[in-house]
Every structure is written in structure tokens, then in C-alpha cells.
Image (cartoon, rainbow, N blue to C red):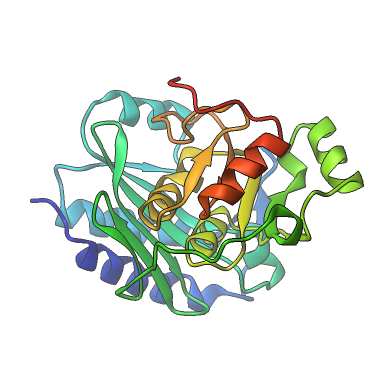
Length: 267
């Protein structure tokens, strides 16, 4: 049985409130092999949501950021529908006591996201999307119309750390936009852009669990995205993908032209 977006959002929100909220400001962090942070909260959320999803929908496979790379690849290669989970997106924020973190869950079927949920426990905001069914915030549709904005007046979310060095230096020395921010949570950045909290997004490389739900939410809110190479952002792979995105079509095309990004490629 295919889950409904209401079932998923309720499950994600209730699990996050039980596993993440009580641990915020009360956990220590350690380093994983790749240098990223890991806390008890990441693992507790991962276990709790995995168990709940498996009980409710045993025919759907499971892939998480916290799994071994070989297991992640095997799940993607199976051809079965698969949950794609980031149990705590924004672990560095969480460990530092910064209230900007989220849970990101997507259902991947036939090589694309079909359901997406991003839940922000600190603001009790649940962003959701279904393929072809629009994007919502706490059950209310996100409007697809946006205020026209020029790049010179735009406020963007830019992650300099993962950008190619030459591009990062160029944007710092000669910023073509008004101002920039970095939330430290890919999932929230996708969703805040979809909700009109910012004008564009540039990121040098995020993983499948960072973008699966968020990219669907932005697309269903009327936004557009490409990689720095002009490719479609979503691919059913764990290889890092760059992102350039905006809700407004004119601003998106101007941004791509300014960053010398080619027109969308098929691969």
C-alpha cells in the first residue's frame, strides 16, 4: 500500500519530537570517517524512523545517510521503491546549539522522488510534496507565483565551502547579488527557498539524502534547479551533486548566465 503524505508527515514529526527535541543542547558529537559530525541524536532518529517505516510499509526498502556506502549502493541498485532518509540534516548546527536542523525523508520510485517530507522541529514546520500534487507547509499549499526579483537585489543562500575555489573567490570578490546566507542545513535551504524565504540557492555538492525531498518540494512549488554543469540535479546516486536553484524563472536564467552554467543537459 502506498503511504499518504499525511501519514508520512505525522510519523516524521512525532518521531522527531520524541528523538531530536529532547536531545537538543544535550548531546556530544564525534567525527565520522569523512570528517562530518555524528551525534547520538542522528543514530536514535535513524533507528526509530527506520523501525517505524519498516513496520508500516515492509515492501519499501530503506536507505539512510548513516548506512555503509556499500549498503546504500545496494538499495539503489535493487530497483525497488526505497525510503531515502537524512535523520538529522544540520548536525553541526544541532551539536553547536543552533536551532537550524531538520529531518528529511523521500520516497524514491522508478528513479525519482515521489513523496517528500522535511520537518523542522524547532519551528514545528512540516514541508511536504507529492509528485504532481504540489508543495505544502503544514498542510497549506505553497504559492507557485513569486515576486519578480533582479539578481542585483536578490538575497541568496550560498554554501561557499563546497564550491569550486575559483567560483567561490569570484562570488566573494565580486558578488552579483545583494546579500547571501548559509543556514547549515540543505533540507531547510531547499524548503525556505520554496517558501519564498530567499531568492536563490547555490551549493557545491550535496548527497542524495540532502536533496531528494527538498528538490521535489522546490520543483512542486514552481522552482527550477540545475547543477553547475547544467545537468538535472536529482540522480539516483550517492555521488555528490552541485545545485543552482531559484523559484523565479527570470532570476534563475539570469543566475545561470552569470555563473556561466550551460542549458540543462540530459545527463
